[in-house]
Length: 107
Ligand code: HEC
Image (cartoon, rainbow, N blue to C red; front, side):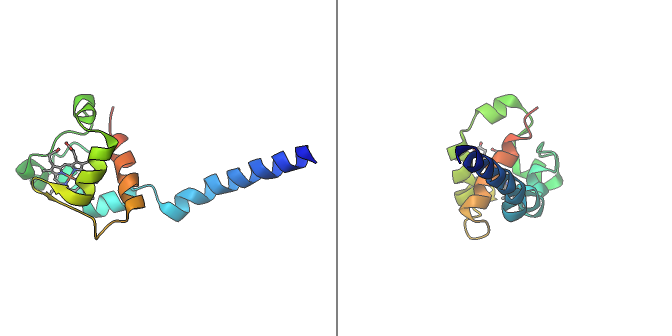
């Protein structure tokens, strides 16, 4: 009985793990559409707009250490300097995925 329950539970969580990316995306698409124009596909910000807006290099560990996840989330929602907020464009869940996506640029 216990064995069966455990197996079902682990099978269920495996199914959820497989289903999650399809259901929520990984931020990549949202990033490519809204953010890459300034921050670059690689997070370095070496785009025409990125250079103009003076974005930082998100592959740089020091830059990554300069803001917390909560701060990044706030910037994505409310904006900062030349970056406008994305509150009405991305959901809170998507904004959180974007934070994780930005974090993944770190070398
Ligand atoms: C018009 C250009 C532009 C676009 C588009 C843009 N950003 Fe920004 N972003 C900036 C600028 C400028 C800053 C402030 C300087 C910096 O921290 O690099 C900034 C800062 C940030 C920060 C916070 C860094 C900190 O120091 O607090 C994060 C995180 C971020 N952007 C993520 C995103 C995400 C995710 C998107 C897409 C939803 C996006 N940006 C779209 C220009 C842009």
